[in-house]
Image (cartoon, rainbow, N blue to C red; front, side, top):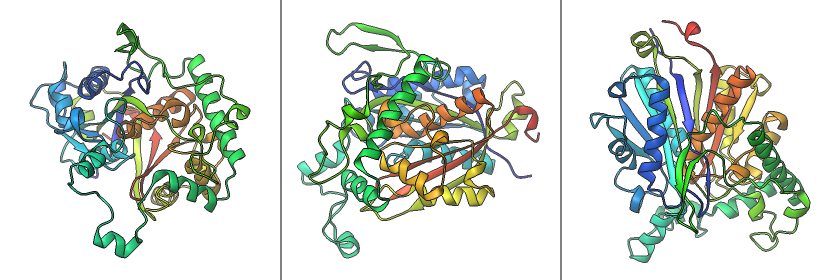
Length: 403
């Protein structure tokens, strides 16, 4: 009998702002605390976890040496018998970790797998590994013979990609600034209403200025409640003649997140497990690496087709706000409703801790669907190199799982 993949637990850290409360925390410690709480909440015996698959983009320094395994070895819950590995699919790394975890339990090869992600961008800036490689004359990922033959001398840039995407879908500076302001408004409203309380694991940090311990940080630090369209209009564009500003871009952030997936074998063995959602569809897409950020559109369409669903069937959509034109172009191309997209704000307000974003988005979406009694959710993330992941889930319960 074919097996399904079920989400039985998911949680995340608060999103620490750049040089904020988590900026001095070791990535393995941050990731371990979130993973540990995911295991505790699930009720699964720690030794029963078959694998920990961790998304991480800048694998250098404290995030090198297989941070997924180092999270296990830094855990206060998991025994050293639990393996761990690390995945890099750029900004979709932990979403890909979730896909690998789902595929593992669906195959029956493993029954309990944790997908997680971590990135402490204050400590390890984006592209640190690339820059160090270039500095030490180890070469760079692009500009080789094959790349030049296919794409010329132009080096890929996420900022240039965002501008190209905005131009392709005719998105104006005004429209993107309004979208960005709304992201902050929604995130602030969700915080005030306590909507993130259940999904966030309180973790101690440090005040970077005073060195004092910040006990149990459980509030996202990057949200700016006073953000307005008028204020965003005053910001300079990132490129001369462009449309993108820092205000319509995701924030540099420190954070971690984790999702536990199981199959029917695990549900039979551990009947106390409470199913939150079932994986319905997994998809990938490859697009022009120069535009880079358009992948969520074909990935989303493929996920819908595989599930036999239409965009109107989806109750909530989470598309990562790497830059405002990414979710905005998704809305335009698929005809989705803005009210269903990132209802509690996105990375423009909450931040984008690279490797942790995929399982962060899934965690927020699952909790939102549980709270509002929604049926279908879709999430998608654009990724460096022009790829993208998309995932569709259905809210369900242990009783509806075929045991």
